[in-house]
Image (cartoon, rainbow, N blue to C red; front, side):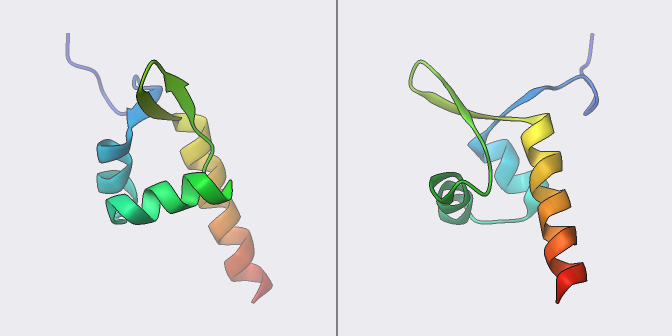
Amino acid sequence: MIDTAEDIRLYRVRDVVRLLGQSRSSVYELIRSGRLKSVKEGRTRLVTAAAIGEYIALLEREMEAS
């Protein structure tokens, strides 16, 4: 079975880089600053699909406010 984007709930940082069009260091900075929420499983940093949606909504709110 092939997973579609709707089926995936946890993304590795490399996948978030591709989805958001950001650099790896930018994604880690977003995580460090709390603008992009993440979880850890062992040594792996993962970002939930919901957290990506929340980050995009935050960007949209900031754009509307400016």
